[in-house]
Image (cartoon, rainbow, N blue to C red; front, side, top):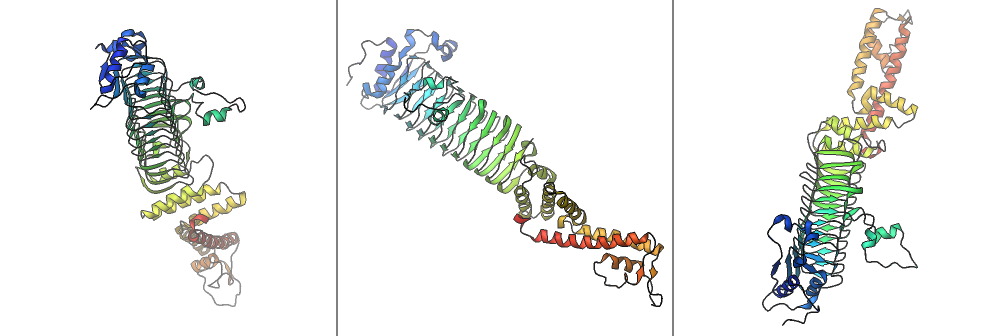
Length: 523
């Protein structure tokens, strides 16, 4: 049964839409000329292609019943939709599918429940859909949205498709476009505006708390502004391959506490501005493979995350990287992924993959701008030990002690240098044997050439330069040589050097052994 039209007059284009809605049939107002039909030229379209937004809203709000045996829906191609399409606080009776349409004013779906909404290849001003529930697909593939999209706390039970779009942030006048009456008793400050979503001038997509049950596909999309997806949940992953984001504020992507089955910023993905994912949880792969990333300060802020696998092999990266306090099962990376400063304190990982030398990994853990941090060295050494590379683990821990030495007072630095020179802080005990051999050889040669004098002329003894030198080196005399012979002339200095060296080597060996045997966290 056809209901009485709530409008005094419908244009021919509107009458087609009105009549097609009960059966969900398409109304195509395009001419067939691709240039003329491009919605970027929609302002020039005449009345034969014009449909008022209020007519569309009336149909979707139940102005017409579905045709028996059919599913009602509004399917419209090539129309100039005049006025604001306001469907807020409603439950739509049919699906909405616009193709190559021109919508110069905002589309509002705030607190709406819809079966499925598609704007394909459209030219649009703005989309507002906070707290909206989409029971099915939400699609803007190929569309241009000049003043941003708002999807905070929205729910999409199907897929989200924003591929091959052009999205722009709304600019400084974004607050004026929002339907908000201010409380004169409590005027909003800058923080209130941010929390209420009224200060969105730098965000092309404002979608904190968004939930998408299917995949979120934002491939080959050009964004001027940032993507704000704090606390969003993408159960089947979010995919941004080949997309280009040029931030108008500090962040290209802000995804703190995001949860996702996977996150692909790869295959030519380009971002100018920081990608921040503090506290995010990625149950699969987080990939920056062949991405192009740049920011004046920090390019990647990936702290406090939980990630199954991180692929950090960008085509280029400018800016610092922070992985601090994250837990990552596998990191596949390359040295060029860290061109400058890198924060690794608190990072825990199970496996490292990539073409790295030990020297490159040591450089990796030593470039924290906050100075010496022991944990990155200990974590790297623990990984080398897990894979059976004990010499490399010792090399890392030796580098840790040398880096720590720079933070000590002069006396500590002096003693540290002695430990390093003598036994490599206990990680190179063979150095003590080398020093002992050198000193033994030097003492034997010198005392053989310039023998000491016998202290007791009546005692019968045969001088052995090797045994005498060894007795000087041992802290406690065991061969009773130093008490029987007195060095002469300048060799007295050599004897004193040998005695002092013996004590230093013994002390260094004991201190080094204690350091090696001490639990790693206390070294």
